Image 1 (tube, rainbow, N blue to C red):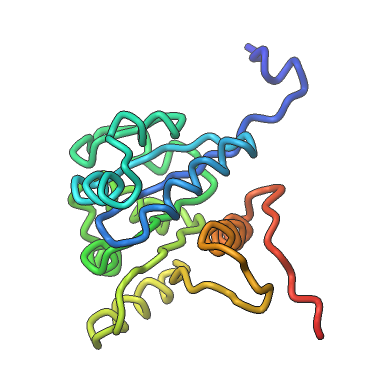
Image 2: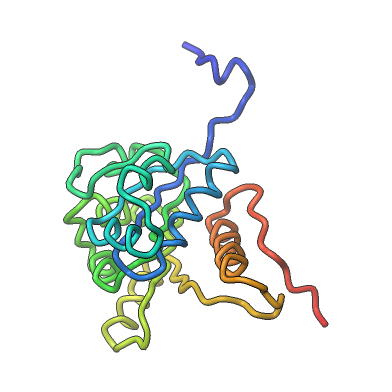
Length: 198
């Protein structure tokens, strides 16, 4: 049976899993969801309780407002959700921001909730996983966990701002970082600013 979508010749929206944890920098996850929507990307959101708390503290959004930004949202305890299986085709996953606890769980294959299970599935299916880790300074455990995730094929992407474009606002810094992340995730029409030389 041919779907109406296939008959119309339209391509299905790309699927992106977005995780939000309790590290500072909730704006990155929220802005990724907003930007993905403008690009026609289907988003599947998992926010931890600490992530919800931090979204409220840093941005003034409640759970309902956050979840409304995604195509579909899940609680971390919903381990039977579609994104817990490799048979559910997604293109990539990003955890923005990513706590050191979540990094450690991913590094050691501890899929004990939907967020870490989805990350584990992303790695085992050889799909792109980006962790926007938020901590400073790093201790040796943090560095070893980042190395482990990198060795498994994940991408460690601390949200470090670029200043060579002379940004005029925090919003501009956030947007630039988000576009770079979308580009790393290989999302079509991501628009990171390029360095063209002096």
